[in-house]
Length: 303
Image 1: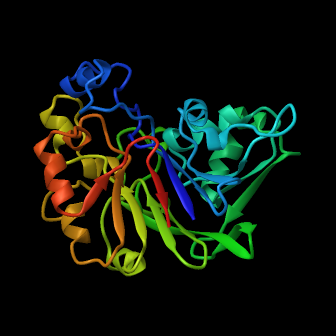
Image 2: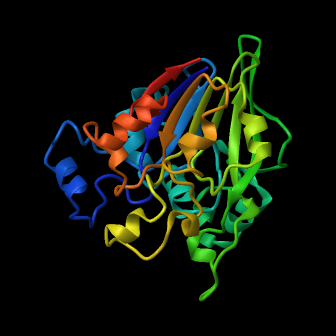
């Protein structure tokens, strides 16, 4: 099984278009210790020819052009992209679907909740329904999405603590951590298991059991500390309020994963405020010392 990180950053990317913060200035200047990143998505494949995207970020066109394995290969129009699996209805997970509107067949996999979001917005009708299959999935039931050389690639969607997309929040409400709005995806080929969880508000015993023994986990790396954006003067919300665990701290990702038996752990969906993006930061050194890699665009993994 092959996996490519198409984008490693959280919504807005790195550098964010309107950010003049020090880290974003470093990224714009060409600083090799502050590599730019597009918004979070990965691609997976059994054979290196047909690819399934996990989330369709707003930067999808740029990501396709940056990865030759996703380029057209046959006839006047074609694509090796055979499907897109969505972990939620947030803008940074679904906006890239609009890039795939040029009458190209593929399948969109997502929970009924996510398909309801797509169905309710007529702009997504640019995905011609006579070519683009919208396939609702049931949580905790594996779905075969590809076959090659006698092997099957399966997806299994499962609930993780999270929240509704920002644009669906009701004014004045404080969104609870709810099950079913945010999902993770397990990808398996009969030999190996890969997990993609770009958003998760808390670690649970059930999630620990599910992840134990995985070959590879891409996990929510949005913020280093819960109050990071408040202290930086970038916003009034904590990470928990936004539906994300923090990497550091007693209830953070590093602590939660310390006892889990996982082959490789990679942080993804990293906000531009998070110092772990910087190769020379103390936070990067701490993450690596704890056994974590930090995703970057173009990172390739073979299982």
